[in-house]
Image 1: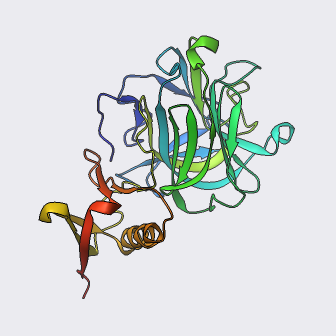
Image 2 (image 1 turned 180 degrees about the vertical axis):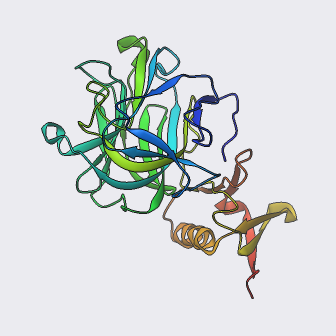
Image 3 (image 1 turned 30 degrees about the vertical axis):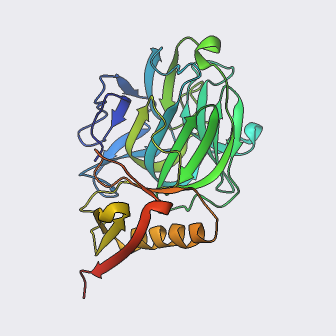
Length: 289
């Protein structure tokens, strides 16, 4: 599971209730959320949002990121939503209103399974179908140098302009997780499980990456050894899915497609950036054989 660092401003493991490791106080609204041990991505619990309400934390200036970088990331097992027809059939995962009006930051899933990310009404939306219902997916909504990006399972699905000074328009605001922050009821609410919800005041990812996973959830079946320039070797225990993602990036990059480096984020404490031009060779050992 994620560990706090100096960049974390909110972190919910959903292990022992609605406890924020950063000290933010969240309250359950309309009996809409419960801790669950049946459908888990990481650790021993997740939060089940039953589409009647969500969780709310009071207004704070710590989420008003000026023009700076930030990241909101979490694991989601999406089931359904009470879609708001007035706003394009959207169910709200994260809202930042306490009354009718503009939203400083919001994240939503639409009835056609696209995902949207808005910063002060500057909205970016993926193509339909990127959210696969009844499956765990990792979502990362990132703003870096004024550009917003949504990553789904580490893959970039949309980028766009989100260059706006949040604090200039909203000096402080609350957060509401699981639905419409204005009504805090079933309106626009999601039916889903959430795990490892985190907000950070940096852009944690700017290139495609492999999402961090719990070793108990997805075990390393393969040992990847990458030999870099100057004969430096790097080792990674990967699942077959993770290895296939790396090979896919490497193959595409050899054809001139994709970013200049690949990110491994395996330990929640360390990120490795493998620059394509510095990779000499790589080998893989299958532990299952």
